[in-house]
Amino acid sequence: MVYKAIRDLALYGVRTGLITEADVPYVINRLIDEMKLDAYEEPTGEAETDLETILAVLLEDACKRELIPDSIVYKDLFDTKLMGVMTPFPREVIGKFRELHGEDPEKATDWYYDFSCNTDYIRRYRIKKDMRWKTMTEYGEIDITINLSKPEKDPKAIAAAKLAPQSGYPKCMLCRENEGYVGRVNHPARENHRIIPLRIAGNDWFFQYSPYVYYNEHCIVFNGQHVPMKIDRNAFAKMFDFINFLPHYFVGSNADLPIVGGSILSHDHFQGGRYTFAMERAEVERKAVCKGFEDVEMGVVKWPMSVIRISHKDHHRLIDCADMILKNWRGYTDEDAFIFAETDGEPHNTITPIARKRGDKYELDLVLRNNITTEEHPLGVYHPHSHLHHIKKENIGLIEVMGLAVLPARLKEEMQCLKEAILSGADLEADEKTSSHAQWAREFLKKYDTVTAENLDSIIQEEIGLVFAQVLEDAGVYKRTAEGQVAFDRFLRHCGAEI
Image (cartoon, rainbow, N blue to C red; front, side, top):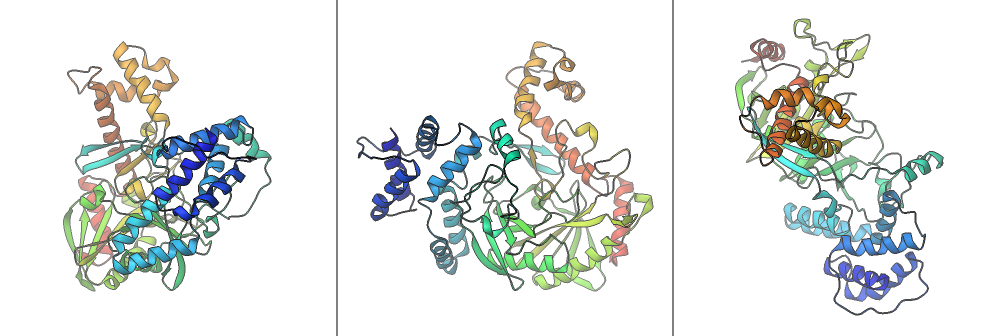
């Protein structure tokens, strides 16, 4: 079986274009070496084509012969090493991407995304396990996902990580040094990972896909230097450099302050991809004209968070306008609306920006953020409030801001337990898996005349989506009330706008 799996893996490489027929004997010998085998017999029979099945055979053999511990972390390190045997050198990948980009940027990203899947850097067979659905809200149809593709560390790996010497290489998960890195128990292997260099604002940056793909062609654009994130004029300019490089993609940045940042703040980066989020589909509900920027289209977006949308054919005008809005917001205090620029010297105001091209115009969404905390809301005033933590407690980062909930894996089991308890009439408070959801469930069940085994799954999914809409409302600095929108307009006027 192991010989056949080795051969089948090499043939998979040929079929997906990672290697050629001429490479097969070499690759088989490399795989024999990685599997620590002393012999090899040419197998017979039809080749297995499913990558997950092929790798499972090799991993089972490696565990049986104690080459690796029987642990998901060690298996991931090992099968990445095997895939790295067939992954082309960076220069070949860069050359192919640039060749295709010269023809058509979409051709380049189509090829590079397939390549990243074929190398198993993006594990397609795990991604498809994620639960995904859409929920209609007053803000449009939002996306909900329960992330099941990111493996949990097991006790063996956790214990080994505690004993392992601390390493500062690579400095973080976004550093360019991850390309080809062998990995360790507390850092994933990246032998099958290749990145694309590009110039952003005159500096070396790199482009890759996220291995977890929360949405279509979910990519990461990161600085070649390990420097902190910062939202400023230069950040807007860098985003439009990327849009001009790949005009069929959007690009956005997490905010640059804790709580509202939601990402790795220590390394300057953006996220992007080819996907239309609910926020992009949301319409401008009231327009504004700003002094000095009368030529820039501006308006407030109908969205649970506080979004200013600006658009223009010249992206330089958007950079100027966004810089003006950001500078005003950084120093803006409105005590009546509980907006404080700083307290005790700690800054609170920042922006989550998202850039795209729509037709012949550039468009920039500026989402106003504030990370102030209070005794009542120690995790953040503009953060999911405690009564929603049973569904979403984590920070609201860029992806959530745009209307895609990334919910914890625990919810899959908890929602199944909740369904069973509701159908059986069990006490929801009695089970720790359902107790945190009990009050929420009692409230939403009142809305439905009929609850059955056939419709309860869809009811629960619908209600989770509605909770996420409330989560976004909590994260909005200006509430969707008459008073909240009046306060929003006060800020716009502070920026020199007429509503």
